[in-house]
Image (cartoon, rainbow, N blue to C red; front, side):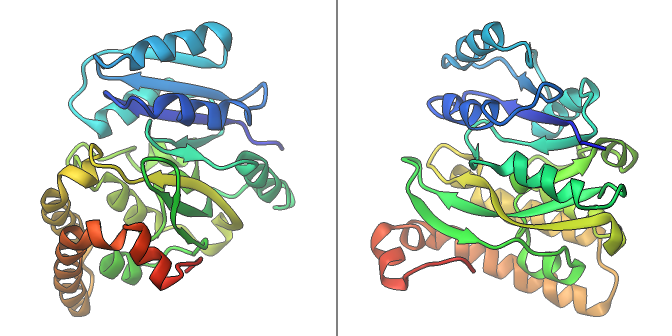
Length: 271
């Protein structure tokens, strides 16, 4: 049975990236797919851009209303979704060409047993769209999440809608690391419920106005809280400490690590 995809787009003042985000996904939609935009009341022209697209494409719906944060916005959009599977696309990120086709092909190869979770690789881009790094798709591991955080990008996974609702959707306890919290919960799935897709699927955009660009210390603190929820062994305590130190150092060294010269010197490829 062919899957249908609901793309959830939480948004607040994400210009000038929203057109690229929506265009990247709209050209890949089937007649059964949809884009559900949940905007918190943007004042930068985003809403006008969304309204224009919704008028041209009936598969695009827009709701503008106050929310209590990104998790709340995602849950509001999820409550209106009708697809069999959910894709989460932030308004400043993009979906790479042929990504939905890759997801559909992987689901069709499952011999009638639709995977509950499909995981692809991802890229990290600068604000201008130039490439910083590419990361191959990887299976979920509790230990690896504890130590390395979101090595799987939320914009490169496709989740069965009923499963996501059963898991409680997106945790409103977190404003920065709700993706890490969700990934920990998804590690409970058995291997036969997961399909690893070899394609690069989504692209995360790093820019000065993004949450990761302005609130690095808050990601460290909230990441500590998320990991605390899922500690299962004594080694997890050590992994949590190592992760916090690494994440802090990574946040303060980001301007150097993401510079074109540094990337050129490293010759960064898919890792």
